[in-house]
Image (cartoon, rainbow, N blue to C red; front, side):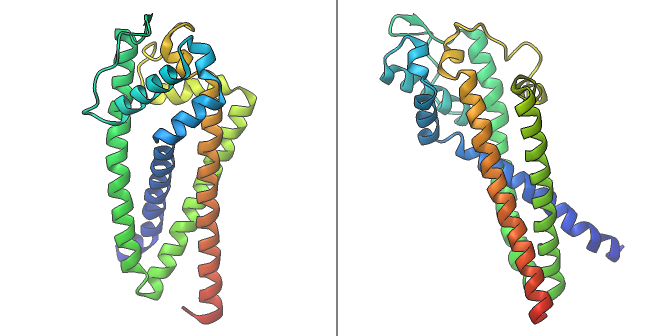
Length: 224
């Protein structure tokens, strides 16, 4: 049993590390600075028919709504134009029901992993387990990014659809092209966000791989 647990420890830890990386990097995409910058880059204000400030305010309202359970409701109209109807609000509630728990789980994982790493780095077997976990997590994350990139380059619509199907009921996340939600967050917003998210995950995978390689070199050279 002890031998089995020794073998499983780095695998379980690697899974936790990979999930933590996904959660932390996703959180970057839900910051006010990121959302405001990205809607500016994709020209959302030209699509909404609202003023630039009005578009930014709507984007921030949505961002806060899906990340904060105590956020105020979304307006039914803005600048004399229709804004968020019941279907849009219902979908955003579904999004919040994914994001808020995911953030809590990510925090728990990060804290737990930090404690585990500190404890395991005290011994040589522990350091090996940490090294293996980092390497396995790096491989898993890199593989996921490469596969997602392959699908995304081939047909981003498929990737976008499959991602939503993981979390939301069919039909609840599809809206007409003139819906404000679609105009504030058009497909280019999500395409570039996928690139940024993949890049952040790739950076984390590289750092984990480098850590694993460095730890292996240190152990092989200095025996620690």
